Image 1: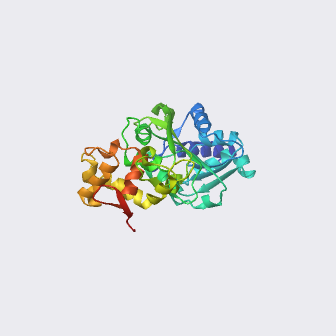
Image 2: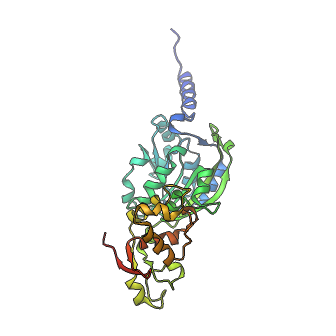
Image 3: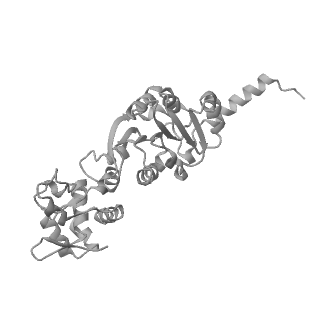
Length: 325
């Protein structure tokens, strides 16, 4: 029997590792192959040495390396158990110095973010969990300050409403932060090469301020929207009688109803929440055209529509009292 040398063992181990780093279709893996693009992602996220960064799926470590080069503390979550030893070997020094913390697990189950004073998410995420990742981290109690992600180009364009048409997706992001399509990324910069192009998406200023500021039903207010403070509204006493906070639950209930049947007029879609004649009163008061569709309504106006749906309107078409929920 031929004796295996240490050199042969090392060669075999390297060969096996090369096999392991091939992207798995079942996990939606498309590894980034461009250092320049990885650097652009980190630049778009404005990462510095004071930051804690949560990276979802470090993969081969292309983006991880650029994050570590900034001096930031990186917490990387990897679901693929076969990639863990590869990342451990590649970044052994950074793990030893505690600059990099490698966690084996699913990002959708990650709950340690509450222990971070502040953190950013920077990642090349699988296309098939884009919606789940964004929804989870925008709606959790301890939100990141920003998210910078490589996502499918068409999805990024929908999130920023590039064509001027809103969607449940775009509104669900804008209600928590400011999405920006930073740059498009060709499919040729990935291995294996996906069937579609990608884009760097940055969501900044993440917070729940939208729900903390009140929606004003006073017709004289710009777009009927204000924070009900004396510095922003001349007749604050009037405003305080006719404004209210809206909850996340109320907001999403209304926009889901509004987009339920995209080809129908918004007034008809919202009629599932209250009688059509009541919806028409609200539209008339807010100067919204009766034939308006959900995709044509901007976020601030949605806020006022949601708030208005929880008021009673009298026969003159003015808000009379808040409906208790």
